Length: 203
Image (tube, rainbow, N blue to C red; front, side, top):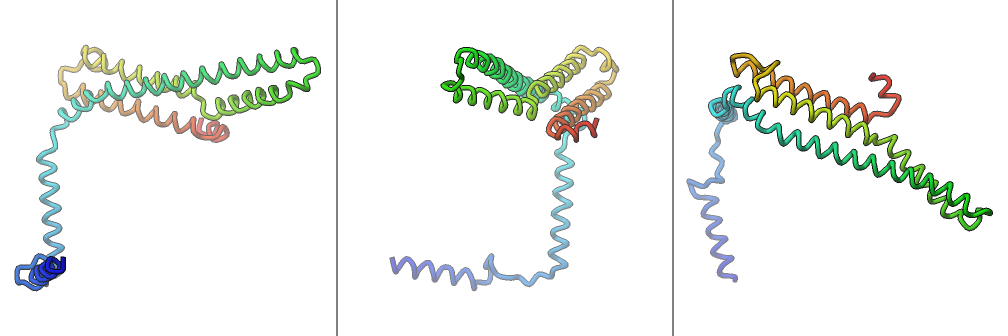
């Protein structure tokens, strides 16, 4: 072990002080280093521009990725719709159970714990439904997915507003419209995340 450490130390010292050592400071001026860095950055930008496909190809690739986006929107919409239904059923069952337990026990003393639990569930579910608004989120997501799908179908069939003779014009309008729909969806989500007073001010 000691022999190995001695050999490693000798090799490291040789590399440190050899003429062609990669760690040796070559005393390059800062101005030269900056110039080299700027040239490397220019070469990187030129290479990126050379490798960037034309706008029509990028728009076509964007259109091919949209089915995944619409599927994601539909999945999220389904999730919020199920959450809303679960909350509604919890409210129905808990509210009905409160009345049933109150009517069943004439002196409600033995059922106080059950009534407290059911009242707690009703309060929590009502507050959560009012705060998270799963029904509104599900509706907005489904509406955005349907709108994007409608524009995809119009583009594929070549009908209005994508009935121009040039594909470039159609793809440009399609990409702009879909991005507008997605921006509108994000704005609606932000409005739902705001407190009620903030939403009224935004509206």
